[in-house]
Image (tube, rainbow, N blue to C red; front, side):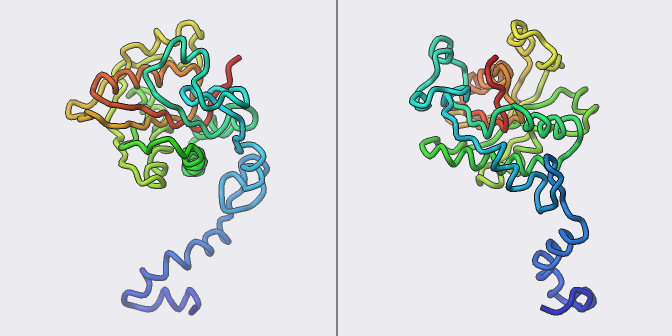
Length: 255
């Protein structure tokens, strides 16, 4: 391979052809990435060792809500989902929302560490493919932010995860399929008993949405009580969606 300086001076079509091969290792050398958790240098925002230690999800989960389940109960819905079935049909979670993973979610959501979003999408892809019997959604829909919060933050962390996830799974992305028509309070600041009421009527679909018979995947960074996802799934189902699957990076364990 000729030296980079020589390639940059050469005219014609060679430069565009070699840039994808030459530039990544050069950029990694000049601008190394450090692991958010341990500080070690590498190619990703979270190094392989920390990923293996903290985001390797091996526990059984309820296939519907992704809450932890007994070792022999992971193939059937938990008691809570049987007693009060949610509007969504399944949930895939890459890991629990616990130390130190919670710091990653907070840095993406409030610290603009957008490099974490593709890394989270890759973990979600792995978690989804591990559920071999789960059908692939027809389209991915990120949980929308309200206009005020979107202006304050400058981005929607759910969309930042959904975009690379859609590409990795080969699924269409519908970033404007749903909108938050009510500027609700953040669920994290609402008492658990009030969270369902807080998001009631919060979502509306685009006027041209055509969902009859479709399987919609709803993407979010973290799932806590599940009320936000349940509300959005209900709106999607009433619009004709046949199935709704949640894809969340982290799941808050029940207290």
